[in-house]
Length: 379
Image 1 (spheres, rainbow, N blue to C red):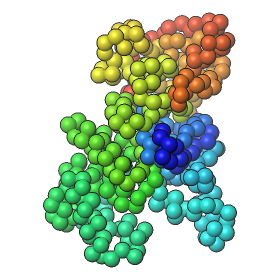
Image 2: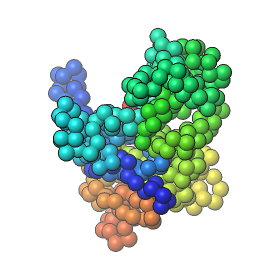
Image 3: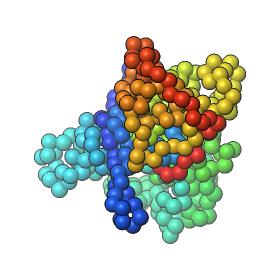
Image 4: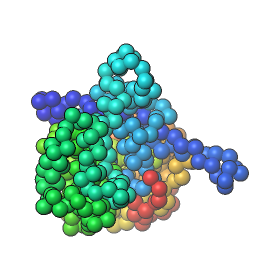
């Protein structure tokens, strides 16, 4: 962080839990609780990029949607610039500022935006691009004339490479390519001058050749409009790129928990959690040369078991212990706390504490290896 205001916290998650009740066999066996997010604390600062990485089903999308007020927490809090998001939502209808909240919910809704993985599904198929982009301006800047709105929209379209803007403005979403649709979705979010944008797998549907260009464009626009990104991805290569280019952080999620977070160089070059090492092992362009040998040191995937546990019935203790090659008996009994490794680098693993009883605990027997992270379903 710099000292020009970028250390200002935009969104703060404090011991966040988001649980869902799922009925089994059409309710015949009652309900089971899925702990999609299980005790996560995270601050996102002004003009920062935080990239969350993990296998499908780890809870990263649920965490992201909770951060922008789309999922109500089961426990814990989500605060926008110090105001509890859900207190603000529940206080709608009260006299302005008479509820003691610094920011009302309408302001928060404008400030926290999302770019979906599938842009076509999020764009109104029956409206032109200009109509789609004019809608947020009509709502949030009603004083803007129709001519000014058109000039503003056309300027953004040209900025993101949709030229001539007059032609693209009259097209419908199905008349655009996937990359062009995603640029429109990005413009729509940015038109509201948000403080934070949740980019939920925002480039995963694009061709590989277009992904770098889209990430570069997102970062260029971030600097232009002074926003932050919570960037969700299953691909640690993409996370490294977008966080490295912006000086941001990478967070690693597993079964609802943030198991490691830190600056890019720390996560990539000095990973501390065994799950982070497994993700790096599974990413060829990040697991090569001396660093890979020093970090991983084995040819097989550094995992004891193949399958990701059911989120409705997670393992006791550390949720990763049944797959972890470093697990010991204490890992089955206790949940690791958070340990500081370096400035802004935190890890949830007993191995980070030289004095923990972990080191005297018996090692677990290896049951399997050779699996590759990233193959489970559901998020």
